[in-house]
Picture 1 (cartoon, rainbow, N blue to C red):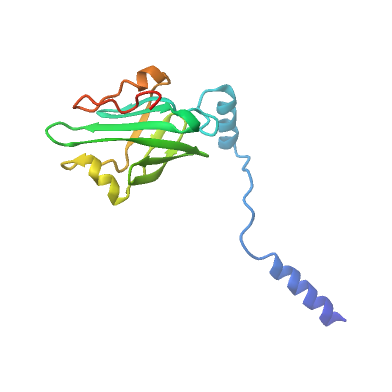
Picture 2: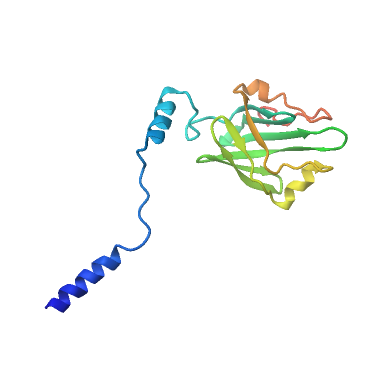
Length: 167
């Protein structure tokens, strides 16, 4: 009988092995972050709206709503003298990500509420939208405006609108 008890104890002990279930931390930092979200001091990406104008130095991004819940998105990088990128396509919210499709260039970007971050390495299909040494890789922009009308005015260096509303 002691062997049976020992075997059950060993089985229970082994069943407890493995990765612990992640839990919500209750550290001073996490409490401060939750308080800042509640007070509106930082944007909550889960409930934020990516529509608007985004920028960082000479990098620009526009997002406007389309029919059916999709978003029209455009990106311009202009380093001058044949060094730049211009891409337009569609995006969809997927949690805190934006599933972006610039034609054959498809990837998920992080939407952080006040910032959008493209992955550090994009698929090869994205290269077609750039000239010279410019790239869309790791594009990181911050919100300039939540205005749809303002976002719709973003143009390529040649004057083509990238986020015309309703397209």
